[in-house]
Image 1 (tube, helix red, strand yellow):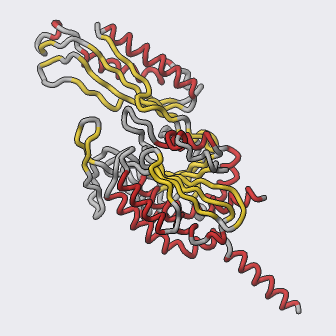
Image 2 (cartoon, rainbow, N blue to C red):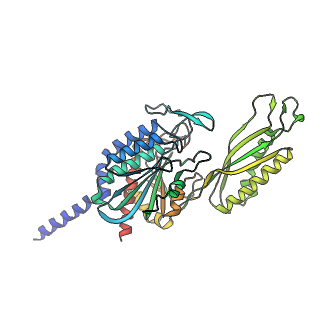
Image 3 (tube, rainbow, N blue to C red):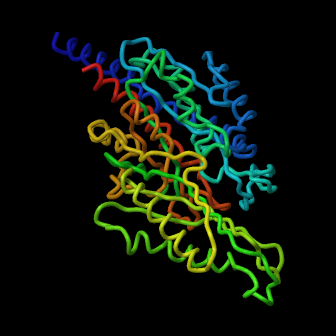
Length: 430
């Protein structure tokens, strides 16, 4: 009789394991990843810029409808949502992937490298998934494929969010997470939590996150330096905005290093665009520059606005030039904050999903993410996946024309989402 009870106990234990999403993904991961890689290669080959992800949206919609899901499309121009309904009670968990590519001409020689070309800010440019959003979409499609076939093991429901324009909407347009929320994706069914991920040039398959501030706020600024055009051989006959602009760029770097208390917060001020002049022997009448501001504190950003205005105005004045200054021409992103309690509870989930290749970030990153808008509405957890080839370091980071995603590392993303879904459901139900 004792042996009979032991047999029944073992059988029940086996059924509990078999009814476990985490155990099931271990069994199914190879088949799931075959599709993830196929989807990523297609998405990588045909990238589209922010608010213009029309073919991308159609491709994702086709795949989701193929899983039997009802898709809500056309949100914030090209965004999509869909729901996977679990057979068991539990929370509503949102999973988010971004869709847009960058105006970067790809220099990787891959069978599926992008050859797409478009017009950006009046110039013809290449288009590339140089930030890895192709991987984000493919991973989330893989998670959707797996969860939609295992609803008997799913406690609660899943809200899939495929979001356009994470890199910033075109000037004069709204977009991204902020517009999706404005159009009401959380109005009828508000998630209890949201999870998101990002690939990065870090060791193969590692997973990293941290509680609290995870990434910086982001905002662009513009400075137009106004001078007086003259012949290059007679600079005294005009006002040189090129020299004034060069002086402004240099002096802007003293804001963080010399003008603000670095013990209060961290910040970065970078000028990424300088345009001016048409010929080597003509001093132009104006120079245009554009840059980015990164901080981890909103009040600190306000101080930086004041300092940029002071520096640009007075340095230009010293050159007898004038300036026009504009902040946030494309809008701004808040600091991305991981819910502290939620993140601490679920960091073991990420460690298990990555087979122990998990690290807690010691400091936040100065990159920015409009996932921050979602995390302002509901508790959020955002994490990074390292996608360098096995045992290789990559010198090329996100936004490089050489940024490379190793397909074999993406299973860490699929498994991380699945582990987070199951473990959060158990926390919620208990």
